[in-house]
Image (cartoon, rainbow, N blue to C red; front, top):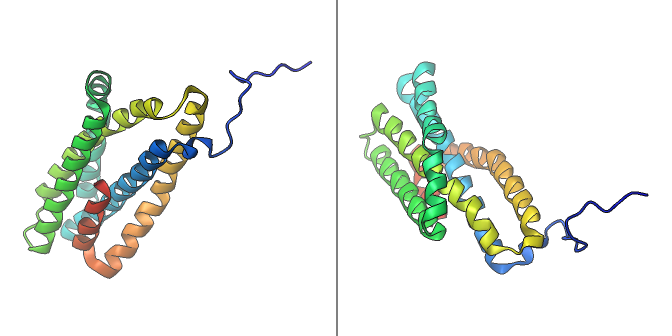
Amino acid sequence: MAEDLTPSAERVSTFGSLKNRNYRWFWIGSLASFGAMQMQLLARGWLVYELTSSTLALGIVTAGFGLPLVTVSFLGGVAADRLPKRRVIMFSQTISAMIGLIIGVLIWTGNIQLWHLAASAVAGGTTFAFNGPARQAFTPELVGKSELMNAFAINSAGLNLTRILGPAAGGFLVAFTGVDGVYFISVAPYF
C-alpha cells in the first residue's frame, strides 16, 4: 500500500501561498523588479552592440553582470542571514533604480560610453548578488511552513516568466521609446 509522502496532511493549492496578502505583494514586487532587470539586460546589450559593433565588447559587458553573481553571492547570503532582510532588499532595489536612472540620463544626454555600461553591469550584478539571497531568505518569514514549498515554486515560475516577458517588453520598448526610454521605464518597478 502506497504511503502518503507529503510532510503534512494539509495540502496547498497550486497558488495557495498567493492567498497570503504580504507574500502576494512581495511576489508581485519581485516580478516587477526582475522584469525590469531583464529589460535592462536586453537594453544594455543592444546599446553595447550599437555603440561598438563588437561581439567581444558585448560578451565582456554581459560577463560583467554575471561575474559578481558567482563571486559575491556568498556575501549576499551572509548579509541575508545577519542583516534585516527587508532592508537588504530595499537597499539593493534603491541602488538598482539609481543605476538605471544614471544610465538612462547618460543615454538621453548623449554622454553614454562603453565603460559606463560595463560599470553598470558590474554594479547591477553585485546588487543582485545581495538582492536574490535576501529575497529567498525573506520568503519563509512571509508564508507558513505548509505554504513554503508552494511559495518557492511560485517564485521560480515567476522568475522564469520574467526571463521571457522582460526581454520581450524591453525589445518592444527599444523600438518605441529608444534605449533611454527602457531605462527610464524600468526604474519605476524597483520601487
